[in-house]
Length: 508
Ligand SMILES: Cc1cc2nc3c(=O)[nH]c(=O)nc-3n(C[C@H](O)[C@H](O)[C@H](O)COP(=O)(O)OP(=O)(O)OC[C@H]3O[C@@H](n4cnc5c(N)ncnc54)[C@H](O)[C@@H]3O)c2cc1C
Ligand code: FES
Image 1: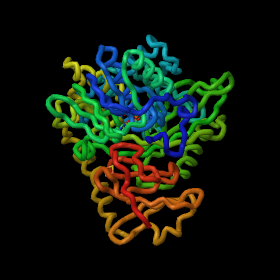
Image 2 (image 1 turned 135 degrees about the vertical axis):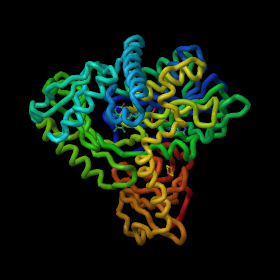
Image 3 (image 1 turned 120 degrees about the vertical axis):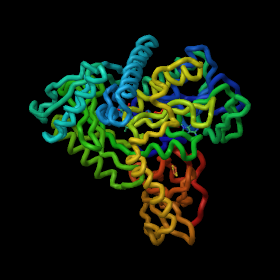
Image 4 (image 1 turned 180 degrees about the vertical axis):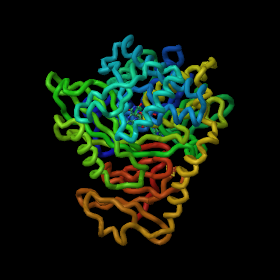
């Protein structure tokens, strides 16, 4: 199981069939074992297979049905956290390396989809960052200055091509951005990896990754192991790290709707505004008369809100105000992004390991980070130089981001303290069909859910990653951990890393 089993369905999941793959049923050996089949894992597998490496990919659920199936799929070299902030935190040189790696990632996707003939609706287009209000113009002034200082010289002032906002609203145009259908692209990568001899296994949860005698040993829940020269942990949030990387990034839930809109009534571009959290918008071709308009936003820290329906309503109202020609939402879904404290992903050797590599900290740019990660990890594994590797080093400590680090890490003590407070419910009898909630039983906190048929499902509420208390997510009908972003099914099965063990069994 993985995020495929959460309740909502993205536009992408609804329009592309799952690639069928068998579970691992024997021990194996390869040059490289890749854990996770999202944009990061499959891009790395693709690059290594092209280099003649033997590669095994393992996924705990269906292939390509993790967070990449729940994205909005803007491919941007613009930085959603802003280049002027990145320069303040990391300096001009590192920001320039970051920009170059993101441009290279977009170019790589462009080239792969063209040369491999992956029909994935890829298109180069402009991105528009617009001030959410007249007061936010100064943010854009700082951003264009930062972009030009990095050599991102095509960034220019422009009129926002959205009639309802008005031409006087300040707006920056970023050239050479892109969009695609993420699952059509991933299915194309799977085809290429299989063609090049890569072996892919679904429904194969990995439960340990160890380095021994120069080898990486990857063990699965069904008792098999893969021995490899190197292992890449591309599980979105690393399963092999108990705490070090997890203190440097924080999980946020984000929401998306897809609505029909008359073709050509909106300029085909990427759009996002200056709010925090910001709105993000793009189009996806549908048929001769309509396009899909995809609108996202309303983010909150994972596990700290259960008003998802209100958030979807607010998102729809915002979309209607900006694009009144749209119809009602046909798809509404949620996902999670990992926000690193200093804005940049963690890509490279896992701290303390020589042959185990991680890619995480995706932020709202996880697609281009996943692809940049495939170029960086390919070079590190093949012992080549890579100019961008230093910028993304997972063991880095950003002193200048100490404030953000401290504030994000207040979540864990607060969550652990919840073990000693009362439950949300005094009795499970209060649960209506379809509802979940926390209940105290003696020293334990239990996660209780009543299904639509009235049957009760009870598990321990203690997250199996590092012990925080999980919270009910009524929209996705799952349990979310506020500390580092694990999600669990109502039967306790992990759906999203870093946890890989189920919530313990419990009885009411
Ligand atoms: C709503 C939303 C909008 C977004 N918009 C954008 C955007 O516009 N642009 C952008 O660049 N990024 C965006 N992002 C971020 C981006 O989509 C993600 O960062 C990216 O897709 C993550 O890819 P990944 O390969 O790291 O993880 P995933 O796609 O989650 O892949 C990880 C895989 O690892 C598997 N796995 C986990 N644990 C185990 C285990 N123990 N054993 C085996 N397998 C395991 C999972 O099943 C999963 O298939 C958005 C994200 C969301 C949710
Ligand atoms: S995800 Fe780390 S404690 Fe739950």
